[in-house]
Image (tube, rainbow, N blue to C red; front, side):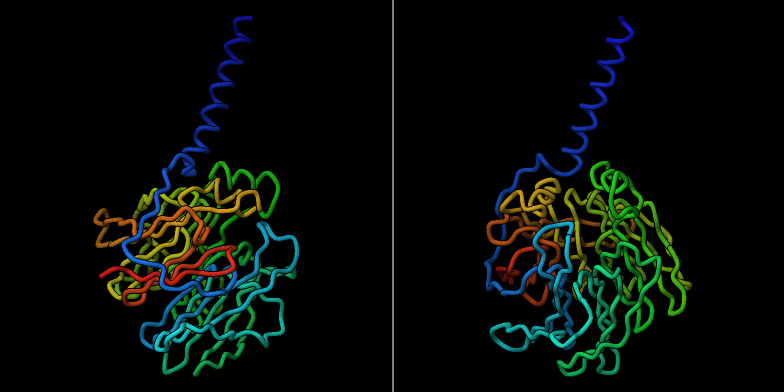
Amino acid sequence: MKFKKRFFYAVLILLLLFVANIFISTGYFRTIENKFEGEILQKIKIPGAEDITISRKDSFAIISSTVRNHLPNEKQEIGGLYLIDLKKDGFKPIHLTKDFKRPFAPHGISIFQKDGVTTIASISHTLEGEFIEFFTLINEKLTHQKTLKNDLIFSPNDIVLIDENRFYFTNDHKYKKGLGRLFEDYLGLPMSNVVYFDGENYIEVADGIAYANGINFDTNRNLLFVASPRKFLIKVYKKNEDGTLDFIEDIDCGTGVDNIELDENNQLWIGAHPNLLHFASYAKGKKQYSPSEIIKIQYKNKGDYSIQQVYMEDGSEMSGSTVAAPFNDLIFTGNVMDNHFLILKKRN
């Protein structure tokens, strides 16, 4: 009898610790206080602007947009790529893919520029499978170049171009559904990866990541950064000549980091979800709002970095922030499911 009681209490304690770990590790108890030293300059009516990247050289932004009702999706989502000329007033978006004939629900995007040509790569989720779509942009005219499909493009989230042909991308899950997916999401099992394409072959170059999400590459320092929102980490790698990666360190950010953008000083700007359980309920349509956060990381060397909270908001202005793309004194910040994204103006 004593053994049964001890066993029962032991199981009960383990269960309570398990539940407590889920709440603590997903930011459930974080205090959300609205904070931003600036103003909302404009709301741009583009739905589900999950990723935004900016060409500072030519002063334009590319926005990845997909209309999402809830996650996970149960039917083919509809989306497109948009361009905003930052040299013009009004920030009027131009729909670049309105004539694209394939099913297209863009997610992570990346650009590479050379000789006046901008290459755009986009993750695309369709009911036919997961694809990477390539386009070229010349003078606001977008031309589709190719569609890539491979078994290693399994659950793609974000992509970063090294040049016109080579790139890295993240798979955010190992399992599409079932208990495996549930354990990845709620237990934070590190089972996702990073894949490198060298122009001919796909190679897994990093694994053991909990929900590999945003990815970006610092060409000046040859560093690759990968977001692990489930563990609140930015993972730092050194890129080798053959494309393989050497792990350097984890940066503990204290928030559910999503897409990563770099500014002219090689600082990381990241849209984030401070409360992952709240975001999960919002994504399923069970909550009206989900808080948004933006952080900035100044990374110098291993162990030498600083993290600054730039923006925090309860979600009433924009829910579920995923990206923060800086341009001069502006920040373009997108999201998963809202019908608009925000242009923030920092106070001088």
